[in-house]
Image 1 (cartoon, protein in one colour):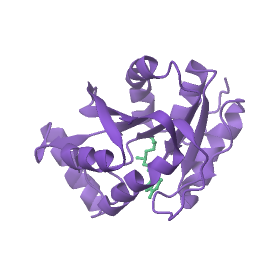
Image 2: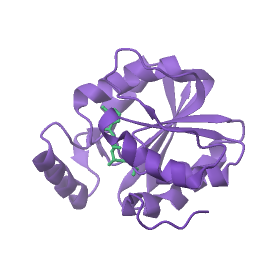
Image 3: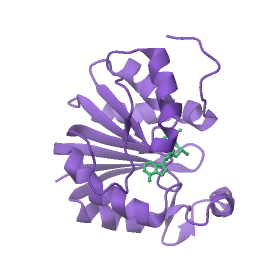
Length: 201
Ligand SMILES: C[S@@+](CC[C@H](N)C(=O)[O-])C[C@H]1O[C@@H](n2cnc3c(N)ncnc32)[C@H](O)[C@@H]1O
């Protein structure tokens, strides 16, 4: 373990890693590789590679954020946490190999709705047979926020970027179905988030 307090840090990532771990433990028995989209500070990669030493965790981010992601990966120097690679979900062709799982946390409400469509159009090219797709973040159900604080969060997001916003669960499910994915679980998580688990048919 490194001890470097100057690395990029996300408090949300720190708070959600243990609750997410509980769910991953149910699904990662037969998984040996994970592609993470929008890794940010790479705290999830750092933590989950230690929890699952046999799993190789590939962090990615858009080109302008890759340096942020790489800093923690370089500091860790874990054999199962390779150098981050560039991946923008809007890339027409994703330069990825195939993985047993795709994971993303708190990214679908940051990227535009069109990017969310491209996310689902892109992931099948990176998935092995029977792959698991895990999506962590807040969602709306039947057009309603699950809490007032998520409604306020949505307003705040839109002030930062009008294209951001909490996504509709039903739309996510529709896009996932079109990508050949079936919903296995919708887990309610702390801080008004969900962890959706899909499996490739
Ligand atoms: C709120 S951060 C979450 C970071 C990290 N997953 C976490 O949980 O701390 C949102 C991430 O989505 C990434 N992102 C935004 N647009 C993207 C796109 N078009 N393709 C891939 N990632 C994107 C951002 O660069 C950022 O790393």
